[in-house]
Image 1: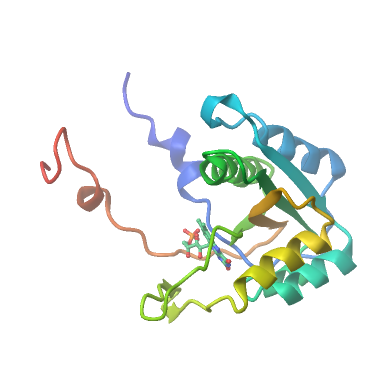
Image 2: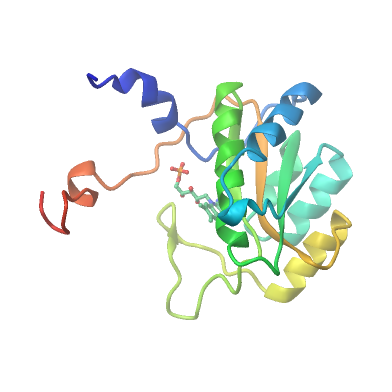
Length: 194
Ligand SMILES: Cc1cc2nc3c(=O)[nH]c(=O)nc-3n(C[C@H](O)[C@H](O)[C@H](O)COP(=O)(O)O)c2cc1C
C-alpha cells in the first residue's frame, strides 16, 4: 500500500487548545465522544472506566478553581472527566487510551480540546519540574487534596480515580507545540539504527 499522509494529517494537527468560543456543544456529539471513549482497548478488557460529561457552568468553574493546571475549564462549554477503578492493574493506561479516543473523536467534530492531568500521583518532584510551553509547569499543590476535591465536585465514588479531564470547545485558536522529529524518535529493528 502506498503512503497517504493526507489521511493521517488530521491526527497530526490535533493540538492542545485552551481557549474556546461560548458556543455550546451538541448533546449528541458529547454522547458520541463517550461512545468513542468506551471502545478504546483495555487490559483484559476490564473497561474500568466511567465518564462524567460536565456542561454545568458552575461545576466547570469549581473544577477550574481546584485544578491549578486547568484554570481554563471555567471558560470551556464542556469537559469530560475520565475516571477509572483504581483497584485494576492497568487503570492509568486504560483511562489514557479512552482519553485519547475522546480527543481524536473531538477532532472529527471540529472541536478543540486539552488533556488535563488527573490523579496519577504527585506530578513532579522538587528538581524534576518539566517544561510546559517554555515555562516550568505548575506544581499541583496538596496533591491528595486535589484528587479528593475533583471527585467530590463530580460526586464520584471513592474507588474511582480521576485519570484525566478533557476540556472541549469550538475554537479558532491553533498552537503548534514543537515536536521531536521522526528521524530522532524512530529506530528500525534496534535502537539507534536510523
Ligand atoms: C498526561 C497529560 C497531562 C496533561 N496535563 C495538562 C494539564 O494539566 N494542563 C494543561 O494545560 N495541559 C496538559 N496537558 C497537555 C500538554 O501540555 C500538551 O499535550 C503538550 O504541551 C503538547 O502540546 P500539544 O498537545 O498541543 O501537542 C497534558 C497532557 C498529557 C498527555
